[in-house]
Image (tube, rainbow, N blue to C red):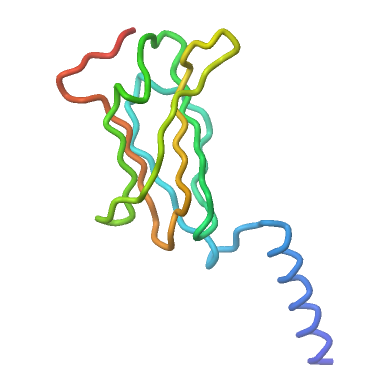
Amino acid sequence: MKRNILLLTAVVLAAVMLTGCILPFMGIKVSYDLEEEIFTDAKLTTKVKKGSLFEPEFLFAEDVEDLTFESFDIAVLAGETEVEFEAADVLNEEEAVIGIEISIPDVGKKDIKISIKLPVDEEPAL
């Protein structure tokens, strides 16, 4: 009887892992520090699988114009350590910039924080 329960538990756990679900011990938390009136309130991912590729998109609010990823100070930190990333603009069909995409090739094993802020001396174009 005990053997059947252990076998069933192992099969269920294997199925969950194969579907890509993130169990509490398999993922890391992602937190964000974004400019409030610049980005939309889109639902952002709060948990990713350890060591995986992560590519979040941050879309601009409708009234924001003339900003690109180069307009921002972008940082991705795991504790106090900087995480390697690449940033790019998100374009619509008319080739207009509608947001920022960040590509993190390996999120590592520690919780990460993504910070996207305008430099202190720059005012947003609303």
